[in-house]
Length: 117
Image 1 (tube, helix red, strand yellow):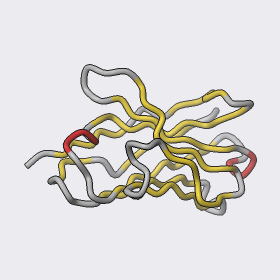
Image 2 (cartoon, rainbow, N blue to C red):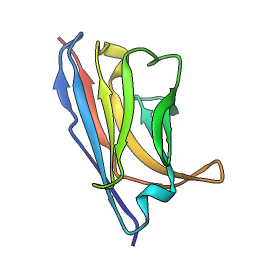
Image 3 (tube, rainbow, N blue to C red):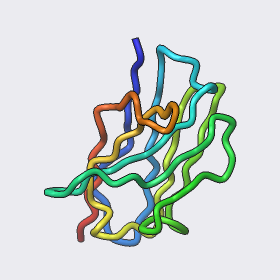
Image 4 (cartoon, rainbow, N blue to C red):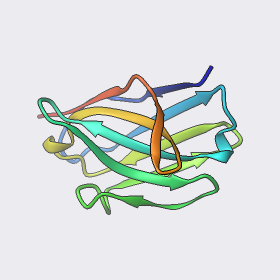
């Protein structure tokens, strides 16, 4: 079955960097666009980045543009999110999701990122 497993979250200080990974299985990874979505404490889901199935530069929410970079390794069926210059407001649970026909159809369980001094 389809599985998406995020990792790499943790507690960091403002200004730090962190790289999240999403390992996948159960589908042909290179056939699908992928996304990162986050949910801050007490708030709704926020889309933050997309990447096409073949890779490329990605698309970003204004809140993370210039600080976060989405990438993928189709050989390893893994999605990444490189986060730099982290802010307290980046504190959230981060989810990777598989995108099809404009809809996020499968989700991981999430990895928690806490930005605090």
